[in-house]
Image (cartoon, rainbow, N blue to C red; front, side, top):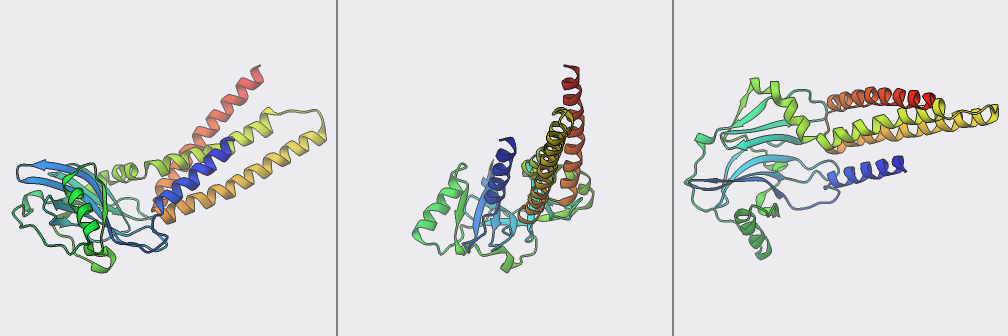
Length: 271
């Protein structure tokens, strides 16, 4: 039952992460809303359409009137850390990233005096966009008017690359992918428990039963290993979970699993 539950959880995670299986409008997803003396400032992500893989994105800063004040270039994945507008960072990454050079928002350089822009939106889109700008809890809106970031290919505006930021980029990328890494860690423990149960805990004097037990345990381990390999490659491909971080999580999971397995066997033998 545990194995089945983990399998279902993994599939749900992958399916929830892949929201680009069919063509759709560009859409905005709000990260945070900040109150400033000159009005509301929104940090957000503009997503395009990745068709099969994850949707490409830009990280943007937008004012309460609707103006985009700053944006990064378009990337497949961006990890962000923005506790306040004066310390707001974007770290682009992909499946092969180890460290990333961060881009810091130049808050002092933002033009906060822009007039309200004119958008040609359908009535439903207009209502949604106005609510998006005014309601901090309204997190998403979509329109072709926003443009697909992968086709616009904008240069970054208002963000400056800072080389030393790569030192703490790993923490930000880790935060962005925490669910996938914890899932990898949890799944990597399962084969250790299967091995401990079928090879170390279950005992029988019958050679036939012993052979059947070990054969069944081996089949389970091989089957789960194949499922696990497919899962981690799917996570890396569809969600951009960096392979290096995944391998670290896998190693930690195997280490924890081996320690826990030994303790369980020792407790069982002591009974």
